[in-house]
Amino acid sequence: MNRKKLWDNGTPNFEPSFDQNEPSLLPFIAEAKTDDNGNPTKTGCVIVCPGGAYYGHASYEGDPVSEYIRDHGISAFTLEYRYYPYDYVAIHADINRAVRWVRYHAEEYNIDPDKIAVMGFSAGGHLACAGATVFDYGVETGDEIDKLSCRPDAAILCYPVVSMKRAVTHEDTRFVFIGRYEEEFKEGTLVPKFSGEEAVKEDTPPMFIWHTAADSAVKVENSLFLATSLAKYKIPFELHVFPEGEHGLNLALDFDGGAKAWAPLMIDWLKRMDY
Image 1 (tube, rainbow, N blue to C red):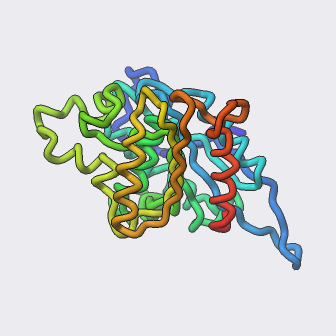
Image 2: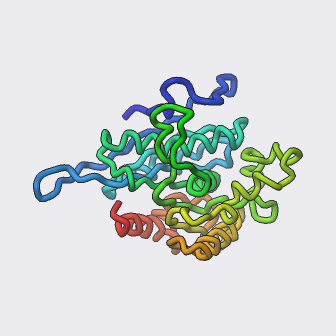
Image 3: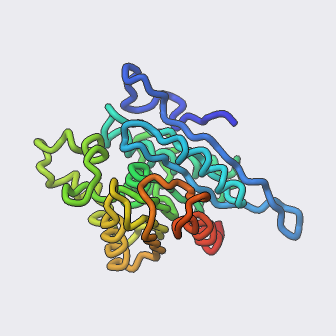
């Protein structure tokens, strides 16, 4: 299927000299099922954000994951979001717009507009978390799509960078997203806003989180601190911390360790929420 641009009439803050594509979604649409009357039933969907420290995209965390989700009866979209030298202004706009875009086109893809999840790996996990904690319910300043809510209905975070706090974060991810603004903000505004463990609030959606204790690239504390905040606000969540496995396991289907269970667990979680 063809990629779908998030903006048809020009991407805000797009810089052609950065030699990147305009942000877009690649659809992986599940086979339609029918109810007892022969009418097609809607599925949920997952917007997948590959990792790459905001310096690019780890392709193995994109389309193969969307295919896996689709093959289990849930539609998916791989998000091609902007990265360095873009910063939080453009990158965060891409995940918010992706949720709105899918919601706007839900009928076309036989998707339930109230069953849209965001999912991300590593830095993509940070982006998904930012989408699930920093959102609005529609704005009047853009086009018809912008009038829709960009709050996702669930989030799936895979060995995610959650925090922008120096003691916990992944430094490259932090630098691209907000690090170039430290002199202006002096960790007073952007750090708490885009640190998921600080940004959780009453209307944060349910989350599925997994990490490995052995991850030497992104500290497991990112996931643990986030789970603590979710518990504080009584947001439903499922957290799995597996003992073995380095960073970047992706689907872990051939991994000889406990983390190989995460993807089936995730599908089960989505199905229990009627995706």
